[in-house]
Length: 333
Image: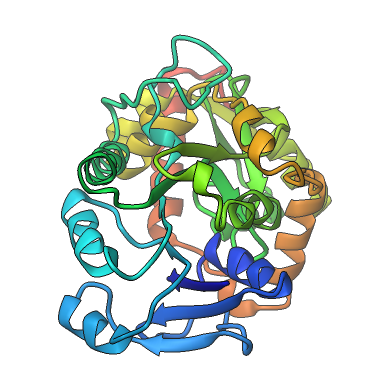
């Protein structure tokens, strides 16, 4: 089976391409050649082109044909339009990586299933992903474009600490500074390790019954944000100084952070994975967050270049906490 990854060195795509190779797939990566913390796997064929330059992609792919094309790089309908044009006659299955954040937010009913409406009024990123899905599904209905839609939720690997602020939050914990937890910290959230996600994703390859269908792929481990931050701090061996701050207040100080909270992370979000499990029975998540976050921290300790402290994020957190302390003097220890 020949598989083309558009991307292949990102948080999710690296683990997926690695597992595909381990399972005997012939993997190619469409890449611009820029390096990242995850170097392309030596077993993969590298095809150099910029996906945003259609002519360069057409020239690079020439007469190549793939059983599966997995696109991790389309984020708006115009990019999906280009993907349809580029891969219409190049593959038997085009897998579009959407986002579970496109689901109704906040959800009227939990757990989320693939039948939950796509309706996120808070986050443009999510609306754009939903619009991509609509365009691709129209192509499926009208011309048989062989699309399968996959909706990851919050997925992480060794190179990614899944907390807003990333290593900056780790540094705050290590130095005894307070950290922000959204709301009262009791909303439920799902974190999925990329190696677990990959089992479901690669399991979709070549499945004709997956054409014209959407699947989310997530862990069944549901945790509160208090638990998530607590497990991170336990892995660091420190006692966290948590301050609970309303998400809408955070949004007043930082729009990008606020969009991601109000449009995603501040709402309880648990998903029913029955659909992907029915089609891919070996999709079983085996990396709990207590193990996954230890892997992430160990990887960061051995890669100093990842230990980036963002002064702007620190300033935003300190400013929020300073103003919040004035309004709620009992809210900060």
